[in-house]
Length: 361
Ligand SMILES: *Cc1c(COP(=O)(O)O)cnc(C)c1O
Image (cartoon, rainbow, N blue to C red):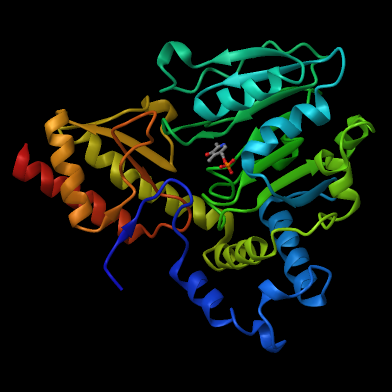
């Protein structure tokens, strides 16, 4: 296999061991004589995967029995609509923290369903800094507060979460779920497309507090109702079986790496390697995010001039560094260093950037 280093933003890298395991049991899953792709989602074999994955998420996120774990479809983007359809009911107002592209999209969809209020915005800092969340003014009759924990495109991340009192806190964790420990009991609903930190595209993990389900109107379509999915243990319609299977392999891999704590230590080391190069380049490279908001998952940066950036991009691709061209809306460079990206790959990138500067600085 070619020597490549995968820094794609999403879908992102998967551990080599996980891909190998999937390959080995693709034709004949655990000796049942068929692929996991070819059997009923009501079979014992699939149910084993489904419930194990739910259990591993509950254990690693420290969820109490108040929470249900769902495997939905439609990406994190469907959750932008499902959240307000379920909870932004008549006469209520939903609060949004607007801290970048993805939270902006979530807010935009909610406006189609009901009344919204922006509680904090990162607009003045061009979304390069997390707005201050320590003193949000949250009316107590608010439907919920929505937040994006890691803004994947500009590379900023929440260091701490706001206290919303009795108002449910709903968080899009698509690009940092299970990358660091969180205090799960503070959240009423967490959602995340799997394809960044937790597996392949096709499945969205939704974690919902049971007591929130009382608020879901009876009148909304069944497939869009969290209550429906909870009542059917996330087997209301055919789940994305192969994606759930891959997520389960990835969850076992995380357990073997020391769980979420192990991930957090390594993710921190990986990010520090790269930020260290940017900060010690005498301005040759420039990190784009404010230091207090820097993401441990998406490291965004520029080089000294557009010509130098073009040169760097060409050389990175020649050397096998994939996926470093920033988002089409943000430009520049972005190294996505999710759970599955090895420390050694970050080291190789850090060394290459240093060496490139020596030749061109
Ligand atoms: C990628 C991403 C999304 C969109 O995910 P889809 O599964 O493609 O809908 C939403 N929110 C965040 C924070 C993301 O990084």
